[in-house]
Length: 254
Image 1: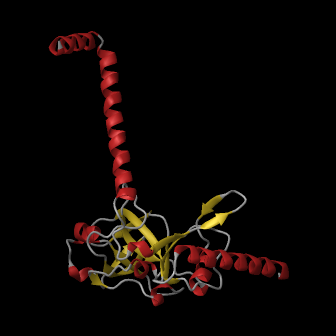
Image 2: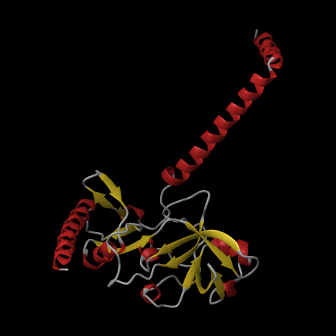
Image 3: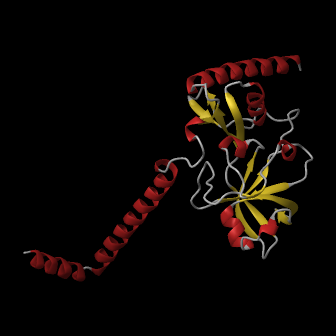
């Protein structure tokens, strides 16, 4: 019976080649889409965070009460949270994975690039396999331009040459110095399967001029051992309310 059903199905499909082709294409697209979606979910949600004591890491977002939604943070708000909060052992911020043109060691190419604050890697407790990562002096206005690269990029572009550390390359047509190589297997906190984060640079915010209007950075904090998430959230809510009041007062005075 099974063989008879198969022969009948094959004969029916051969009589209608257009329908058969459409069915095969639809099935292939369905399998491909399912595989792609599972790949993203598996990478973003199912795999545990690969950072030391990851259960102490929290994402810090803004809230828009009128819309009932969350948002990124403005640079000035992040700097104030970082300066005044007592719930976190360390706090850092990062942007989205954009594109940058890298030159040096071959033809120029476009790679995934991310801006971060100097505390970003320390917050994740990441240590370099070569050189060093960012320090406060790298993240100040007017500081020398430096970058950190991923292990994958270092091996692919520079053949794992250890002399890359301290060498100058171009980053969006500007000269920068490579100061460190991230450990093998490091994953950026926000994964883009189509655009891996290969080059990291610093924001170099100026606390005196940082904006409170544009919300474009994402923050991550490492809670102190004795601090619960609820306590940290309550502290940030209080700080945010105070900052909003202070900001409104400054606007009125101006």
